[in-house]
Amino acid sequence: MADFDTPRLVDGPDTAPATVLLAHGAGAPMDSPFMEAMASGLADQGWRVVRFEFAYMARQRLSGRKAAPDRLPKLQEVFRQQVALEAAHGPVIIGGKSMGGRVASLLLDELQVLGGICLGYPFHPLGKPEQLRTEHLRELKTPTLILQGERDGFGRRGEVESYELSPRISLEWLTDGDHSFKPRKSSGVSEAQNWQQAVEAADRFCRGLLSA
Image 1 (tube, one colour):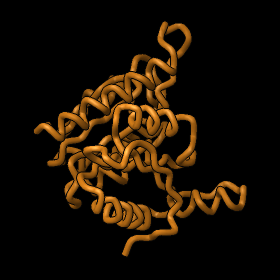
Image 2 (cartoon, rainbow, N blue to C red):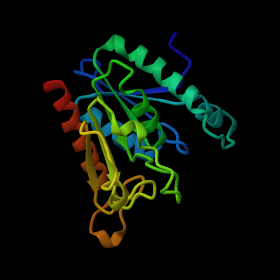
Image 3 (cartoon, rainbow, N blue to C red):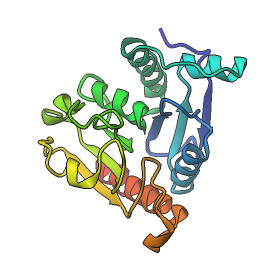
């Protein structure tokens, strides 16, 4: 049964060809500047974008006190509920920021969705490159786009390019970007430019899923 009490934000037209369902990362809510930029950018491209909040983040919003993420099975169950809710609107593409994208990627082959979008995938915990979170990514069968900053501390370009990943995974690199795609001033690229590149890449990916 879907959890209708889950906090949600909806952008874009109800007549969109598909819904992009996005979850937030571990430390920032669904209306963070990063999530706002991704959601509004995709909505401007004509997609219906739904953001939702996991229970721990909803509690944190109410209490004002930082809360640790719920355990993975609970996060997955909330995601399943949201997919079931959105399936009534038509085709669904799932994804999210960091942890949210990881949870989505673990469900991709289980759920009837068109594909997945990971916005800064946490390939390993910060400072622990030996603890890889890539086992399921080797056998993934559902088309997936991973948008990654080149110097992301959770998976830098030099690290990620050495990993064994499914051929169904496409990688797009954001110039000199960190985990939220923010580059250094010396790069000559702005955060806004990287965010726009990410939106454009996600839009191309979604359109490709529909035309496949």
